[in-house]
Length: 460
Image 1 (tube, rainbow, N blue to C red):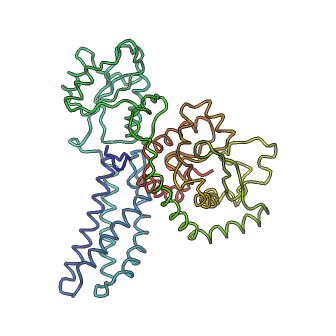
Image 2: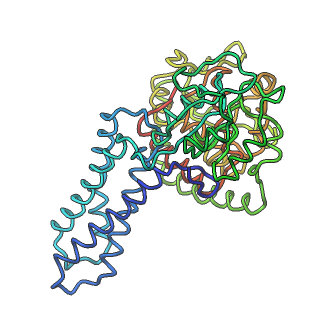
Image 3: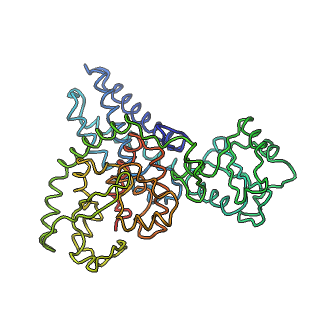
């Protein structure tokens, strides 16, 4: 894994983005310079065009999720996203051509060159997305433990990192019941240190279900680390692999003494300026859509147009969140809060559309300008549910240490939640965001939010 601005990336994702950027730039620049070497063309113009087009395609591929580290996507879905990327590349190429002074270059040829480069890059992207990692590039991982936590590590790696190869599970001293494949359980005839060295292990993940009674061989783990083998506890492993902080592997000491959870003045100021600029631009751009949504809401179900609801914000402070009304006026006629469900019969026909496209969330941009919310952060919840969840889920209140967001890391990583169990799953992503949030991660979330809106993923 690679850490960039406090956010963990798979090396495959990072290498894929770097390759695509270089492939597009070099292919397009060489083609244009070679074909038009006899024309009075400023090389800087060609370099600028190739650079802007490569960056634009990188953004399009990122929005479409072509660099996500999940390995469970079907090849047909990847190809469908690639076709959409190719279609989106056409207007981008024409727009950049119109903006730059490339009059001496043949229009048809420059577009053919651009599309050829994009096609070559996307074919490579499909192959890379579903090709097994080269043997020499695989990470050899030894899992220390054989219980349910060790099994969770195995499932997480299979889902998110095809370059990871679990070479075996080393049983702990006090673990009686094994939940991992028996053919992968290693013998305890040799020490952990000797086993790791003999099997050329790159990384050890400590996933013991029982740590009492001297089950943790600290000296051996230290020896492994001194020999260049990475040693990760379970919380750090899931943070890097899945972009979440698992509640079942979390303890207060890890939160207190570990890195992250920085809420400095500079970060707060930069986030606020970013929120104001982006929210202003989005409000101006979305104004026609909001006006159209308002008309259809009134035509179907009359007034009120907006829906105000009390939510819990920064440091537990209450504020009113504003959304376009997507449910009937009597949705909670008995006054008792109810989770929104899939196929909820309280949602109007217009409400189904604006929820799917996330248009109902747009009025919250005004809350961002006011300062009650941020563009990116944990989604604000109602006081009734916060009281319930705080009692049932450990560390739930940690998410209130940053401003709530219009969108968030949990929203782009997990489907819509309507139960306590769903809230616990989403909290694991919220904790990752609170621990590692930065301007870079905010931009990543905003890009992935566009992809979520385009696919309608998780909308209820």
